[in-house]
Length: 139
Image (cartoon, rainbow, N blue to C red; front, side, top):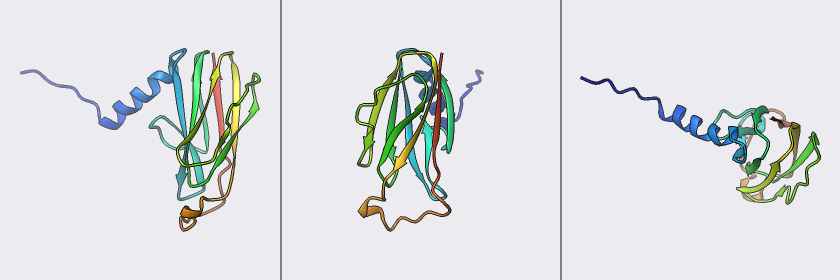
């Protein structure tokens, strides 16, 4: 009799989502997701949403940011080696922007949120809106 070892589907998905982020030349996808308390948070792959998210990737990784919040966001670089952000305005649901993190260093980002989309104004949140901060360590 053989014993099969399995891991929960959520754990497998998290491992798969994290694998490309660690590989140089891969892509790390971060989603801005809507939360009932505090409105917006970062989410790496299928990980837990966090207001302040930090992770490490290898140089050459492409950072992809997807806006799945109920409002538009503008990605803003606050610190780190200078990047040219092309189309940092994510002005519709599921809009995204990408930037290649070619040099080692610590990159810090935030977003500037716009007003809720008109068709989402009935969506209520509790508490003050979060100010999300993203830190990406590139080695």
